[in-house]
Image (cartoon, rainbow, N blue to C red; front, side, top):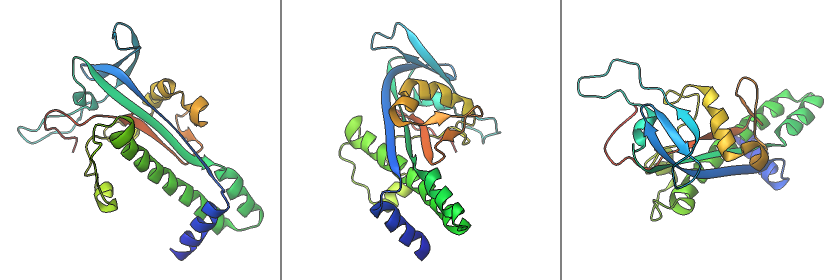
Length: 213
């Protein structure tokens, strides 16, 4: 723990890494299990379509099998998206340690970059809720409440159970202009580069109780 704290202090003080982010908000509507994203407020032209997967497991009686599309209204609604990275410079730092034969510090620097990316995503989502989108402008949560996700709205990341299909990142990155705006690219297997990166859609709080557990 002390080694990580010491390296984090040095990482910040000497500015080893550069953080970049992009966010966006778009008019949309639900179409079955899909989320249709429109070009503009007229909602007359479909820009892209985000595909979601309905839960496949057997649920208890009275518990619905949910999909992320269920968080979107069939009529006029909105969806957000984000992509953040703290990984610009990460590879150079790791290579310097490796060249010096210090594999421990190389691994530590990569782990810290990953943790910073997760923290950046949490901070960006907080600013979306309270400032950029502003639907929870009076939010006042401490760190424990943030870690416990006691806020309004969700930001599910592709690759996790709620959205297991990594290929959906392509549509999101196109909407965001993530490569141009934040220097985050997708590999042919839809991994993000730099590796210390987080992305996903952002949903407003649902108007009726539902869950994805």
